Image 1 (cartoon, one colour):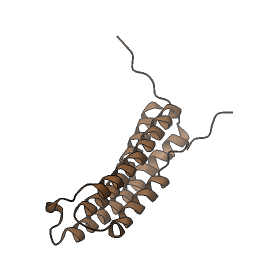
Image 2 (cartoon, one colour):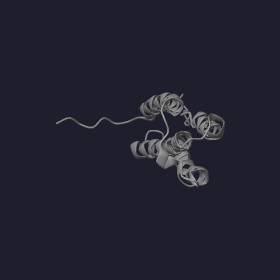
Image 3 (cartoon, one colour):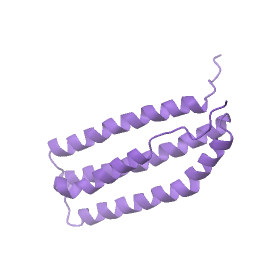
Image 4 (spheres, one colour):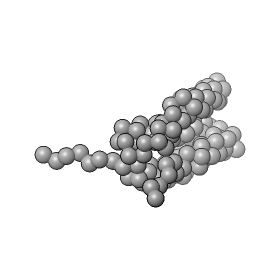
Length: 146
């Protein structure tokens, strides 16, 4: 029977960077889909714009709450215990949740665009998502052993 491989913090960082690069590609695909595909009539109801803006704002608030309450303690833990497999998994899992929330901002922009809005109206969603992606670039947070 095959034993599960122990995940090190360096392996987790490589996996996180691969995921980050795939999300960058998905960002470009979301923008391309929004510009080339026809919109959906069910996304064009009268209060759709307000609802998408509110959902994006709530998502952004939850992202910063999650950063402060969940991810920051995991950062502190991995800085002090980079070889502990449970700490590494928690850190990677919380980071993954954060990039999913950043991705949701871009999806709100896509839904806004598919609902008949212009590119200029969807640009704030796309820019915010891109800035969050850049902010969440996975970096080593532990000191290397000397």
